[in-house]
Image (cartoon, rainbow, N blue to C red; front, side, top):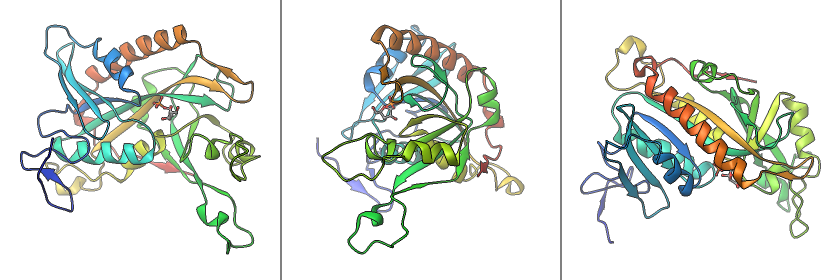
Length: 293
Ligand code: R1P
């Protein structure tokens, strides 16, 4: 379908839909679970109340949004695909069409680089990014340049993390599933042979590695206060975030999760998350998000 868009700074259709996520005001709840895979979004949506309608939007850029209720409380389940750019599209475009505080919890998969075993779950209290230093690969690279940069840590919401006793620790989010997660590929000169060791040397408490959680935590940290709050609280954030990560792979021991275990993890984590989200107070959603490191 052809759409007409207005406003080149923040494009929307003439009926108010944002350009990539494809939603408009009233179609997304203040409480959101975000996943990467649209199949997982469909499975989680089956846990929503059967006596409330579920609105489904599928955008032309790969986002799926399902909004219904859990125990009578409106909740959206949003699949975004993979990577920093998709998380950035999702958080910004949803933020602009939802009034008031937002609580966003990512239910994702990850690889373990610490003690967590394949098939277990992790709730990272903070996340940093692992970024390929593109300049390192240029013909005129600086002589002492590093091939990858590891950022500071951005925190999850403390209250949301404390609602579970699962493994905590830090998560590294990379800008590639391959090079920036230390995978070896003879077709490219990735210069990443000891990258996992470098990550653990900088942050020994790192448990997991994946591709989106850092951007979610970072966006929460830089979110500005909702317009409705008092000027004295104008330094508060409008978005609170956390993540629960299912360990699908362990590169160290070359292990991968079994499909039956994935189904179990998704069901149990999905129910736990829906319970937490349906009970958490939105009014507390403006506490400031922190950083360390
Ligand atoms: C890679 O296979 C994908 O899986 C992980 C990574 O972050 C990356 O997006 O997360 P999801 O399972 O949530 O997509």
